[in-house]
Length: 206
Image 1: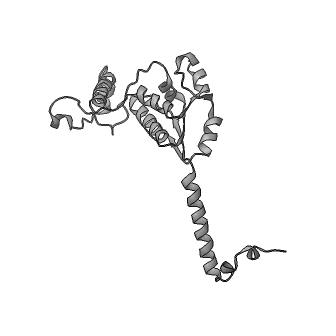
Image 2: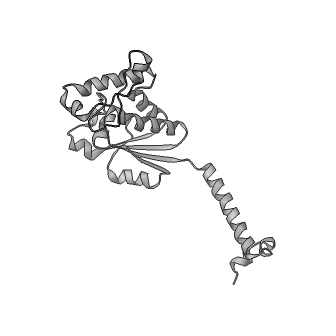
Image 3: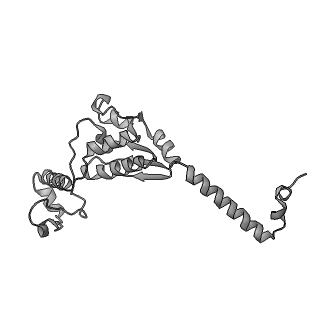
């Protein structure tokens, strides 16, 4: 009966046990490097937030990875599903997020560079505070030339990212498929997300 050692080349057989181990490790590393060099990276994102500030990480990371040639799937569920609606009316919510500074998009440079950390009691007690904060954020985004959420969403679709809508959330919130953009690749549930996440190289929960 042939053994593993019989399959080795005479040169390898002549090596010591330690040298054989080193040879195998080197060959294995070379094979893995070759395989990884030809493999297409895969990214899976679960988007659960529907506010303006949380929409940006989802679509920026997704569109960038897709543009780099990655296979990208983004599963939109609960409030995150609202990011796929035709009519977007996104707001930010500083309340409960004390780490988020407020930046003023107007005035002298020293004034614009100040971090206006507003206490939660002020945010909750002043009527219309979130609308004002949203307007200021939108002005800041526009001033710095950052793409809008619809533009980034379109970029994801154009670059081949797979946008998946959670069917359970659609039913839960009483929405219909007509409320959403036509670029949705799939209407599915948690099992579909888990399948994509299982085979992904990078998995993000946003």
